[in-house]
Length: 248
Image 1 (cartoon, helix red, strand yellow):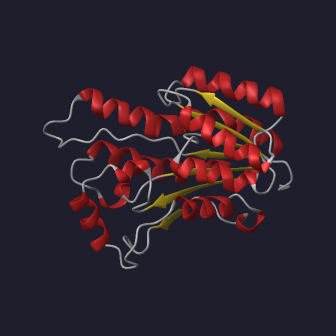
Image 2 (cartoon, rainbow, N blue to C red; image 1 turned 60 degrees about the horizontal axis):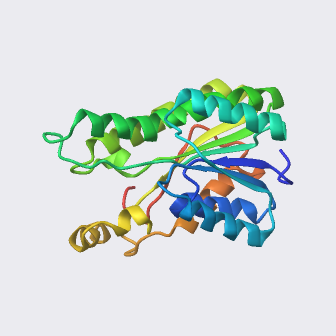
């Protein structure tokens, strides 16, 4: 798989880890297509501006990735426009935190729809074109919470654990077609989501990290980029933790 002018699709690409992933692939000159579902286009426009400075072909799409039909139509258009998708990064995610006793059905459903169903939607929509090319990289972003759990996040933990099981199964199904499927599992990363946590919660997390610091989105992006490279061509079905030792 040539790393020249690859078409890379990233969900949740307007900020945080998603933005860092967009910018990392842009450094190779790839064609970057990212989706977002922000209430406004401010973050997406900022990301487009940053990508424009690197002078790469870019497209942003406001899309509900939990909608099977919307995702299917989107990828049909991408393949029509660019003939192929070389890399898919499933990064979109939300939190709807609550103790299980108080969690509403809507909080549960929204989290599973966006975090887990979107991975099914996008992977299913892109796999046919990758099979045709006998080449492709599918990388999904999970969370350490899916491995160890976290109070008040039963919905989030379930969705992120589901990504791991889904990935291992799809990796087996696609291994003979030249397509690798892997998961990157961030720990406590400096994003908008973690910045909203109370100070005491942040301190509690940091106390559990042997490296003694929070991770940066660029560190996740580098791992994703490596998994999408030829150097990782014999790696599939793997769960790669990037967490400073929070989970070993």
